[in-house]
Image (cartoon, rainbow, N blue to C red; front, side):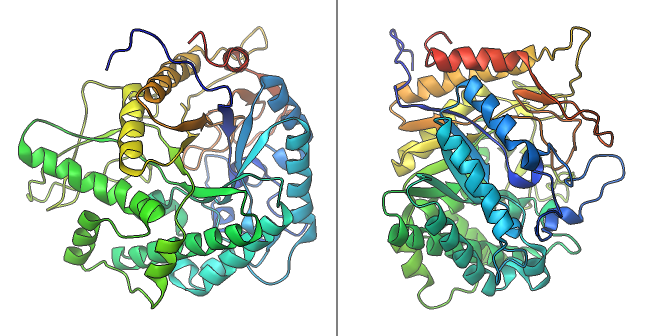
Length: 466
């Protein structure tokens, strides 16, 4: 739809940026922190998460940069095993103190903390006890969530339960060290995560009813390859399995009908204990976080043995399934140097589809572009490609607002360079460059990129001159 007059961003729009604990904090075994599943990753050629961007020791410097940037919100995660080294049991007071100090620093800078409880870093002790396959993990998550809500009551207005739960189910390789569970097991884990999120939601409403809570799945619009009706059915299939299964549960507390039919057909439908569905229906989301990077294109499954594309462990990699859909390339879209398709209009499409289904406020909790970058001869990082990527995506977000979408804010990934789950430190996302290599920590100095100045000006003008 074309609009003759631009609608401005709301005055209270949450211009933000994002990170996650294991990718930015470092200090992986300091001050009583217990190991998480991510600490088992010790790749040979890329960096691990032991030091990351050393945010643990440099958070005051980093928050000062956030304030200079003009951020209205900072979306980050708490490391569960920094607070509960065993995932349950004794609290690590030093770890809790770090987050108290970080959140106080953010509030003093006028920045709204948007806090994710769980971002891919399950405490190793829980993993070794069955992880999300064990219902005791639900109890541990609720205890952890309650401590966070009690500790930060009145300070954190926006909570997110679980980051990209759908990616953990559809692309589980990086989340399950040792053995990747079967599909049947994964969907049982999925159900337990749903119940854990509902328990946390109930706890927040008991402890701090003024605060808001929701999920943060990775959501994409799915396109049919052609106008063939069979391709359109395939797109419906994948969108239901990848997106609506998770958002229908968050918004309505029920299993999406098409996804449920798929799970029953495949024999993957989970065991549901008495009271689970009533709990889920009674504790739905206040808003929806949306991680968006690209769209997907599919065609009808051919059932010829070639529907499943090769998997490389990357969450944007399409993997088809016989009888369901076949992954396809979209020749209309360019790609990043790491192969992720670039589709800014797809962001508008995704936001429109999600809002039309659920009519809940939306917060873009991740969106960004990663690339290889170096400090140039003038001592700066000139990331023009990032500025252009974000400019066109912000413009599509503004158009979604004009379409009637209730968009609360936009938190690009990432505020600062961090360790990519799959590509280490060679894939940089931040507005702030960190002077380190894959193995060589160098100075760890923070250097503002060109995109920092651009985003600072965009926030100052409230997006008026996109």
